[in-house]
Length: 572
Image 1 (cartoon, helix red, strand yellow):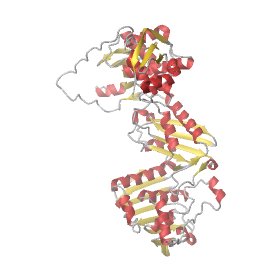
Image 2: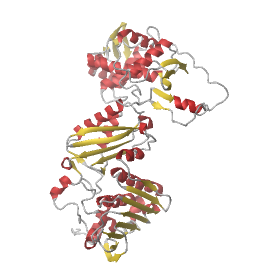
Image 3: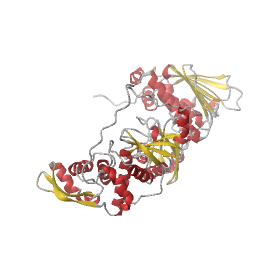
């Protein structure tokens, strides 16, 4: 039987180091945060060999007293806290006393430091966690830490690292997060002696805009919200600049970069229906809260935190983001200075699309005129400029003139948005008006679909559907929403059933049902519109709560500013 033994100190330290020093970027993060805790105004990071050969972090902060240098490499030696209660008010980045000893356990470390009033600096050399020497040295006030031969004592860790390019990207991200957290500090980052990236001292707003890659102020939307015990402040990049992943999402709690799924989901919820499926918003979010309301002592790397009330926090942040977005002009703009590319084929003009045969009864293209007659009063003051329809291109896009340029409107996406908001508003007022079919329509359905109809019959009624099970494989449809044109009622019901089954955007089944209805009923690409119908649709879109996208996140309207037109035609 194997006996229980206490591990040797060298083994225990290296095991513990694995929790803090996961990769080169972990070393950079810890050393840069130490520099910020020391009050640095300038931080310089030099990296060679993707961090495996050398990581050097220099700062002009307060330094370490000569008598404390050797102690700094002992585990749990820290100047940040002295008792357990201090964890409830910690504001510094570091406080556990594990970073330097963990790094020294898996690398060769040289630390040179000098406090401002000391006559000389002190240099310490540490190998494998053991302090080899501490000697006087010439250096300016501040601290420089050189980390060489990372993971030489734990070579198995090297097999789990990514490519050098990926490791460098993670290091750059760590420095960027520090730069966002401390805009009053200048940062410099260089890889293998190449031209460095530089972050000069600036305002938080400018630092956030730069981190998002925004080229001008119009690309960034500021958001603020009062929180229980604190404040949330952030900068959202215009939905036009959505990303394929969440890499451009930065969350900070009391200045500390963190991974917090609830906060990220809250911001994404605020962007609901403004982005295409599978795309993600870019943002920088700062929460400044009472330290007693957040637990930062969750993980040795301090990347995770816990809040006392995640649910309330989610609602406040999501609501603030939504309000900020819906009170901002979100019209997509043609990128200045970019000339539209020529068609792939120069064989001749594009063929005119064939007219679409509309169902009998109330065609979708006449629906806008019916709404203008007063059946569906507009919801709000116009949120778009006054647009004068000029014509229709490719049977899909309305061309309009505005006071400041040219506008293109996707007629299907625009009508989807108008119908969805009116269905939702009518539902809130008491229910969507129905039109009774001349004859009840039997629709073949599966047993599962029949069960959905029975379970959601009240919700279907709220959206204007009167449908009930009829036998074992049939649903009897008696009425549909009044906005639906005659015909295609069986397809409309099947879309409604799919929405109730959870297929489509939105968590609320009634919203999914409204989306499915609006999508099926809306004017289609290829439908020819009269000038009156175009004008009415543009006015209805301008009055929508969110006139900028359909509920799938696709843009409804794109602007070509007058200045851009003049550049294209060499008039400026």
